[in-house]
Length: 169
Image: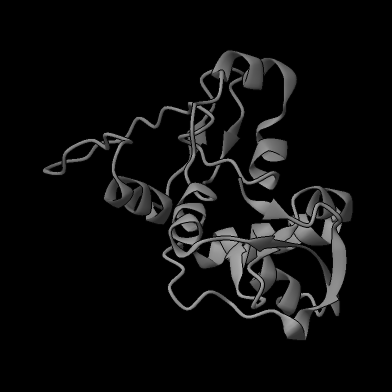
């Protein structure tokens, strides 16, 4: 069993060390959303604190740490955890694995598209279908990172299939 100091501590951000082998990256657009989320929701940040090993190396929350730096926060919520090297490697990945999918019927019934985007959901996660003439290009499968990157770079108007709202991704 992992030894966790369950108490969340607010620690000087300068004491924390980003994990040198963090495999997670974030686009500039996603980073802006994360900064906004951290800034506008300090209670959520505390409910999901940065997790560090005993050497103060960040295991979970490297991007939240970068957002906090960008925002000029001096202290951030941290849990210090005693992990083996194998556990640390596992947590580094598991913190960023996304399980499950969103129920798009519930999303469309209970939330506004712009609100969901503001919360960080992508058009694909919201179940939005984009009909465009691809010419010689294959349609996006929505399953690959390359598709998602290309979809984010498109300059086109989109109509929500649920409510008919037009917007630009």
